[in-house]
Image (cartoon, rainbow, N blue to C red; front, side, top):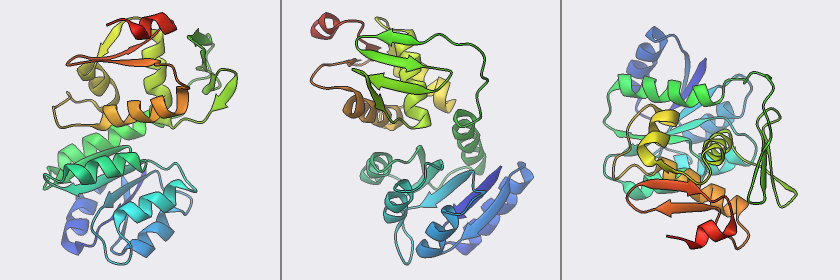
Length: 230
């Protein structure tokens, strides 16, 4: 897998590049924002590790422009304690984030967790799931809401499929985090919550399809009546 590392810290980029190559990745680096965006838009990049603070254009602007043309997976690097940076990154379409300073092994683990979601899926027969006005076709990886096709990212599709297969039951944030990121949820980790927020915006037309169970997790409602119950 080809990883593009966009970070203006040349020493860190060199060290991370050496570590990730030992982990079996091919690594290219860009130390400036405009070059990073140009490289990220070229074919052959499987995942972008993107720092927020960059000369030229910052990581947020790179991500915004990148998402206009590409759905390549992006892992944002943020300053420790900067919750706003993490939320903004997820809102703009980042798949995950990691706060600096970090353990390189955790970076490699998070990269692998993201890439697993983007692996080509088997075309084995899979029945269409239809619940509460939403139709999901696992084979074609298509979703329709009230008969209209909805464009979802890979993460959004996989989360929706897991929720719909468990419609009427509550899935904990821990279960979702472990399934998609191979780690437990923490009170300050908003990755799953932001993907759920994006799903709601794309799917819901005045009806609550995905209900938050405070302190536990999420539930996909089988009927409009389910959404009204506590």
